[in-house]
Amino acid sequence: MIGMRERNGDVITRVVRNRKKATLEPHVFANVKPHTEIHTDELISYRDLGEFKGYWHKTVNHSANQYATATGTTVNGIEGFWAQLKRGIPHSCQREVSSEVSRGVRVSSEYARRSASDA
Image (tube, rainbow, N blue to C red):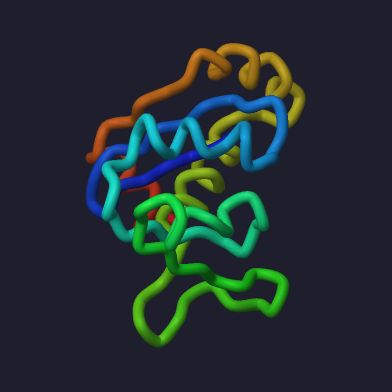
């Protein structure tokens, strides 16, 4: 899945086939305005979002245990959303639920704020 969260705003999720650039970028382009600041982890598929695709792209390096930078780059909001979603779904039901969300989910900003603060 890919998830996008606007700071203090809505969360959009989509089920994707894989984590390749050609799969993920169209979802970013369809949901995020150009020249927007985007925070991601270091996944190579996101590498060209900055200079070549018209976004102001900042990253955190999870493999180095970095979850926020001194300049405020973080993906903790969307990570909190995923954690809250997983906690709300019993492990035995997660496969069935993933087929339900395959159509994509738009979550209200109120839920996204609660999820991020609960994590």
